[in-house]
Image (tube, rainbow, N blue to C red; front, side, top):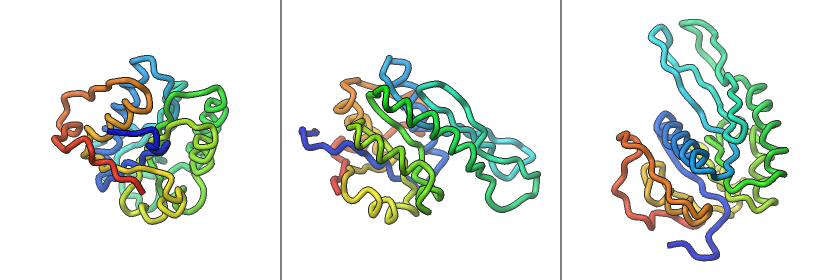
Length: 197
């Protein structure tokens, strides 16, 4: 399906962040379990009965370090709960690790911080300069900003196009990965669902 001209970056576009977090986490863990040198961040969500929103953690795949991403501001608190210092701490681990080499970089989200010009943008730029294949989750609401940032240097697929996602990963890592039996990771979409930009 892919040629030598396949791009180094795959943007995985999604509407449902919970589904994206599950698929990208499962993919990262499966690659790591198979001995692939995978770096980057995946998000884990824990739901609590007494909270309207889930608790969020980031795991850096290379080191397995975990960062508390959400601030607990109380049962009825509104507004942003994102701990930007946690993102900065995680990014501080990834940057030097990329210099040691990696087969693949996974970043769970090109989110608000990145859309505003910060966050993990520098990590994406570093991975491209080091020619490390990079998979980035991109919420549809940030797709236009992502396209301007990545300047057409990426392929894309939807989060529900699992076979296309796995085909890209196989092309880039040489590994056949199977995701679990959970319904969120199932798709009958065709393998050629990758769109070049």
